[in-house]
Image (cartoon, rainbow, N blue to C red):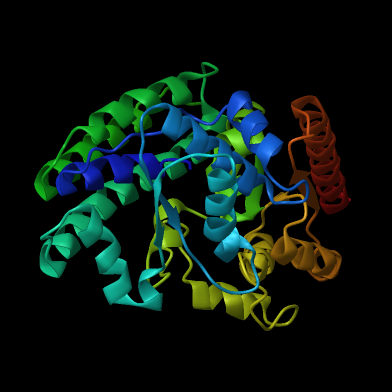
Length: 358
C-alpha cells in the first residue's frame, strides 16, 4: 500500500525476518482478488486478497494483516480474508496486527512471534528508526505533489522521485537516514520549475487506501500534476499509523480536523469520514480551488461524508468532485470526469477574477 513497503522492508530486515514483498498491485492482482471476494466487498479487500495470493505464489507461508475496530468494515478484513484463503485451499499461518492503541502487549506479541526472544525495548527502538524512514518518504512524496505542477519538463518530478527513493531506501542508522532524507529532498528540489505558472490548487480527501495506493486510483495524483494541478492530500502513511495521530505530514492534528468538521458531523462514523469533512473545510478556508474525494464503492464512512458534502460546499463555497472506485471502474471515465471538473474550476476562477475587476 503506497510507500508502506519501504518501512516494512526496513523493519523486517532489522527483525531478521525472511520477508517477501508481494508484487506491486496490478490488473492481475485485482482480477484474482475480485474473483474470490464477495461482490459488494470494498475494493481494498479485493486487492488485498490478490496481494496475499501473489505473495503465497512467491513463497510466503505467513500472512500479516492489520486489524481495526469501529463502524468501518476494515476491522473485519482480516477475518474475512483468512476465511476466503483457507476455503481456496491455501496453507499458511495468519497473524492479525491490532492497533497499538488497542493494547501494546498484544501488539508486541505479534512481532515477538515473528522474532522469538525480541524484547519490547528492542522492538520499540526498531520501530522508531523504521518509522523515521517512512516519515522521510512521506515528506518526499508530499513535496513531489506540490512541485509536479510547476515542472518545466513533463515527467521530471516522477523520474527524480525514483532516484530520491533509491537514496532514502539504503541507510540503516538514524544518522544515515537523516542525511539521506536531506540529500533526497535536495534532489527533488533540483527539478527545473516554472514558479510563475498559473496552477489549480486542489485538495485530495477520502478513504485512506484509495489515497495511499496509486494503483487503486489509476495514479490520479501524477496525472493531475501533469495537468498543472498543485495537490495536497489529507492522509499519509505515517500520519495514519502514528498512535497519537498528530498528523505531522498533513500539518493538522486529528483533533483540529475534527473541530472543523463539528458543525456538520460531530461524531465518529469510522474510517476517515469525519476527517474528510474537516479537511474539506480546511482546504476551503485556505483558498483552494476545489476538492476531489476518493472512496471505494460502498465505503460506509465515506458515503456518510458524501451525503454531508453538499452542505459543506454551500456554506464554504468550494466545489467537490466525488469519485467512487471498484473493479468495474475504468480509467478513461475517471479522467474524463476530472478534466471536466478542472474546466469548471478554471471557469469559476475566471468568473471571480472578472467580478473583482468589475
